Length: 515
View 1 (tube, rainbow, N blue to C red):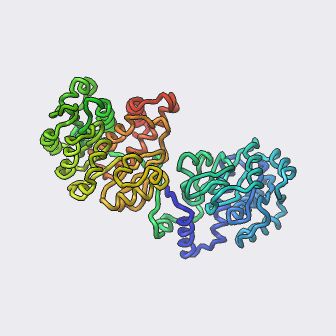
View 2: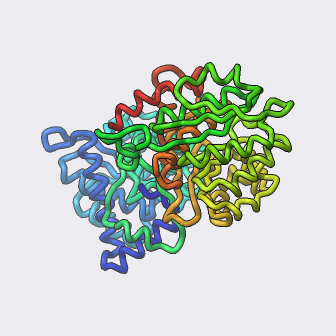
View 3: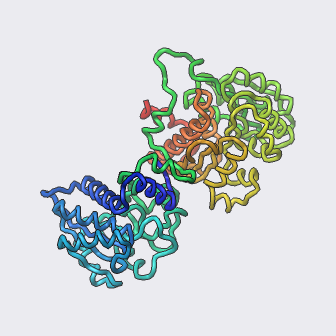
């Protein structure tokens, strides 16, 4: 599903108009589509009409609301239209309002008068909020804040049309009061507010209304669009398990991970690679960490290599890693590696020498930050998986800058260096600077805000990469499933007490829903 900004949505609408659909027709389509969704969701019929309060602004979003009012009236509902901001001003909205008046539908004017509002809120069985659309910025004025508070306190479920009023569509922020929706009907495509945490919670359940804007209308806009994935889309992307196959069928992942101080990183990364279906996994780790790491790993091949006095890989381990990589189909380096001269030299030389698709994570990224231009010498596809702190060291921007603009920063970096970037966060961003679109993830929860979660994610990604998926697709699927698995674990246990190993151990059950 596309995720577009307000300007991108308008550009897509203009493309549709060029094809022959008028703006008034798009408004009519939007209102009719929303009305059908509401009718289906609330089981409305002539035999089961509902009392519906539709709160409309004076712009195009209000125009959508007027069409919804007319359709709900045609369905047999008792409909009241409340003008929240005065008379409609947008030309198309004025025309749609005249049709509401002609039908004899009850119309009331709010005029900052709670006495007028109260009986309609008490009587309403469904409240439709169509006050502002995608163009709203800033905060609600006092009058609308009072209205929003009253609606939020009402017993009836609230359906927001496109964007809950009070929310900034593009920045996905809320300043002050917002109309809280139980369901939001997104017009044609998701907007950032619909999926970006934490303000996405104000949208409630999401449903997309098809109003006649095509995929090509969105693809043909000038700027790069974002998108998100659902379970069915991810299911179609995953490597299939063949009835007649063997371990060689599903790739060989080499995980260069772990150290004396971070043995768990190797366990989680290797476990993620195994649980996501790689046929063979080799765990390469420092010899000095063997007593701590080896007992935890029963399924993979073990490759202990030279270690230094700090308990990390010695640079001399590189020959063993290079030799092992010749038998692998994908390589992961960095989880729990430690950051010193030996590991820095090891990672930078592996980037130059390894000929297989490679993921750089954690301390591998710290090593990379000392010589970022080494990426231009890579002979195979590279995926990096930084959190905002690591991204800051890579690109020289502050963490607040990165948190404020994760999509553009990840995209620019990926395009500059020709790699796939997985910028981790509440909404992880995946991009490669060349694919038509930027993936923004909507799964996951704060239970993943714990050391080891990134190691598991990296192991999952290298597994998909080893099985032959393209780097961008492998990264997207790993991110989506990592978050989805955490969501399932949180339902069964808690976010506070959830550990990365809980997510790892739940993966087999999660995958049962994908087969």
